[in-house]
Image (cartoon, rainbow, N blue to C red; front, top):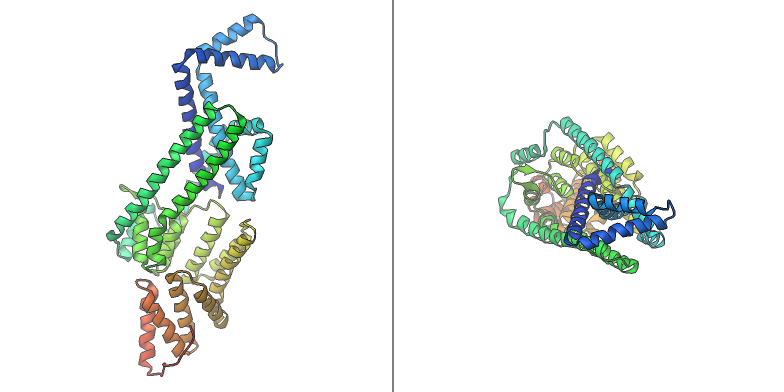
Amino acid sequence: MWKYRCKSHLITLLISFAGGVLLMALALHANLDSYRELVNMVINTYEQSGVNQLTSAQSAAMSKYLMAHPEIFYIVSGLSISGFFNLILLAQWLMSQYNVHPLVILFLVFLVPDLMFMIGAILVIPMIIVCIYGMVTLRTSVQSDFRKASLTAENEILKVYRLHHEFREDVKPIVDEVRHTERRVTAIYALGVVAVIVVTVMISNFWVLLIAFLFFMFAFNYLLHYRANAVIPMAALLYEQCDPEACASAVFLYSKRGRRLKLRQQTLLAQSLIYLDDAELAQDVLITYPRKDQASMLQYWSLMAYVDYLLKDDDALQRCKEEAAKIQLRYGRTGVMIQSEELRSIQNKIDLMNGELNVCRKYYLEAYRKAKFPFQRVDASYYIGLISFVEEDYPLAKMYFEKVTELGNKMSFVKRAQKYLEKIQGMHIDTDMNYES
């Protein structure tokens, strides 16, 4: 799970290190007197530490050496800035993995700031090594999964999709809008990073730095939330318009950069493929899904359970339930409710496969009442209709299949519901009975 964070962690460390080196180089070359003052300050600090008392000759020699090797200050500056960001990234990982409260991290920074920032700087090089190892092993694992799926690269997924379904170019304006929003957020984020580096270098007052740190932390979290919401127009193609073809096409266009395809929004794409009745391709897409935290792991196993149900793989479905039960969201009551709901969904697929129709009917009736989006109502309506048809409750089956055809647009359930309606019509059964929906 941590391996999915390695790439972004490594890039952040390298960019912040380069930024620290550049800032120090500009500062020292612009003002030679400041460079001398910095050298004298380093020597005085060393003497005051009590480690070793320097003679005047030793002080002069050290001063001369430092003046002749400014790269030492470049490296220290780079490590300081990258250490600051390393500390933030490690804190984020601890908060997501072990539910460490942000106030605990802030308390430690407030209590022992020098120690915390020193830890961040010292761990820069070990974290670079760990990140490289994580990226290499993750790539090897994904390539192995691709080989098992008889695929050579993510471009193969697009090729298979084009063979099975229509690729919609008319959704490109929506994708362009999403990209425009993301570029704007990225630009603001980059300016914020520059501001953090400048403030860290230019301001020495601890309280001002702490206030600035809190402000930047909340500002960056808001930006990340805003960026995540940027894909809502694409998601609405499935959630609101019940058009999985358009949604899948939008995700492919969104993921493409020139000739290269790097899949993003895999959960949205997998959902679209599920509702296009292409479970095998949805399974291939989920191979590339980055399971960075407990929430993404839960979403992965929930979607994989739906895929395994469509593929009629009972053993895999049971494994999905077991893996999902191991996850701890650590969000308090909210986390317990979310996990409980996902486990109910997986258990329902198991019950449906085992023919527990009464239990499943109650589940889908409840899901229909709670549904927030049209695609959820279509999903629930289809299975209520199917269960009612199997139990020979044809009036109820007809009512819910008609709901599917009314709302389903291009979801695969529509064609299936139409076939069942034709069968019911061919039976010449009186279905004019009133049911409460």
